[in-house]
Length: 125
Image (cartoon, rainbow, N blue to C red):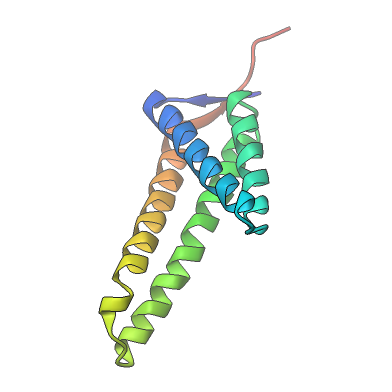
């Protein structure tokens, strides 16, 4: 069984996005943030699964997209609670926009993974 991408643009953009995240997280590890090492390992595993069109890639992308939505989603919720309690929004705008973008990317990846990626029987003997 192998993974089939009905939308080739999604496949290419997903690889580019993961590769850019890999570069960023590698930079974070080099500058001393060792928690970025977890992200590097996950991104390398995703790229391996994608390049080999492994049958587990769809499930891995699915869970990765959910995690990409949970973190920024909770951060957005926390910032909205801070604004509701009277904190100044001006100090949080950059972080809020970044979290909204990450949440949106996670949502888009989740949607396209669900609608355009399929597992097909391989016809190799």
